Image (cartoon, rainbow, N blue to C red; front, top):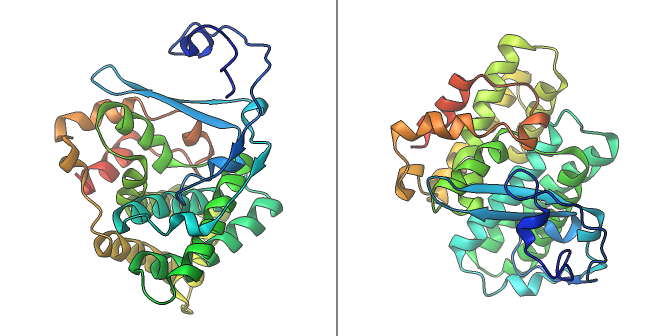
Length: 288
């Protein structure tokens, strides 16, 4: 919709992979009606263009004219989603909420939405995924969590999972939500370990502990125990959802360096701290 009236190729107006020509407009007004609960793109000014292959790319471009005039979020549109799709997309929404919750750009506004979104995800995702008697209520909570994740990512940014998702989606036929679901536990572990070692006073450590309490519904002796419990819980989710490993999509050990070399785009800028190449490589290796 943003570039529909250009009369030329979209590539003419993309930076980095195209000619980068400015486009003065106008855009075509549009109504966003999400049929999955994952990206939250109905609430953002983001769009993504990708080309898959050895020289592939996955680029996000942003403009106020890409914001929908109206977003109609109807959870009943999720009723026909198969469990695998709900799992992948739901973990994308969850990852967006968690990453914006610990982001360097987090604010009281995004904190309130991210916290409420994480609670809605906790209370609705599994009911929606299992498809039992409470599935309809679960879908409503999940749809709201996804919408909230779009708002929070637009304001606070994301983190290392989404940083790695760009080259992974460019080089391999791996769905974005699967990347999020399969990496979020190990990326969270890496962030917590690096923060403990290099930035023990970073507020993100407190946020991770709060997420551990919120998502598990348990109290812990101290923040460290709550952080460890969060990582354990996310690993359990990964196994329960049977999210595939990266090797299922053709990635090999020798591909790790190339992915790491291409992962430091915009999403990495709001990770709680700068992860070293070796730390990012270990995240990938753990899910290879």
